[in-house]
Image (tube, rainbow, N blue to C red; front, side, top):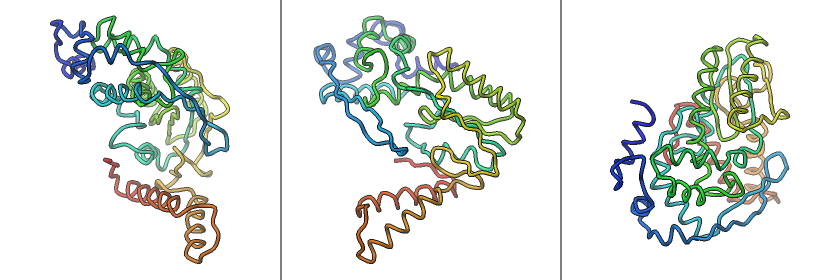
Length: 301
């Protein structure tokens, strides 16, 4: 059974008598909200920045409350039911940074690639084409596209954007998985972070993987962030989605030392730049990494 057949099974035939003609009335029924609300919601966003781990700022474009409620319904009742490539490990129940990193443990070489402006570069025409592909008629696909895009792409901050970024890139993940297998490598993608791992260190093979990935991205309107392209051999610390993978999945030593230092300060009543809540969050993250890294269990929450 192909991907399209699986999607047809999820959505059924619809009131129009065929999966190619699902209407706005069908959409309203599936989302359990009036057509008037869907067609009348204001497309309104606000922007703000949040700090990144490298000290830079990430710009978030978030929907206003009424639009966010509609997007959450689309996410829960439509998008979460659809097929995502198994090697796309971000933003999915049952997957985590640990499950993404675990695939690459003990490799001779890690190749890390980053997609530049990932969400904004996932363009509106691809979103519209996808909604038509999964069975919505032209008018409804246009409405769904309007409800989930902003300024020509996916807004980083909308509840629907992460799921759509995975769904629209099924073909990309499939192509890169095939590329990896041909080169004797493994592949995974966590949002805009792509990782290939190899048991050999042939420079020609490594370069062909990078060129192949760049070509596949270009075909979909993406570009590599060349400044973040890294080839890391096993004699150096290899990190995947922030976790060390040389021998097992583990927190970086710097992070473990930070946790111990915060604990020591708080136990001895000394001033600390981190709150008790921040320490609890770090400890919970450490426990999750250790548990999933050792026994392979995924986070089902």
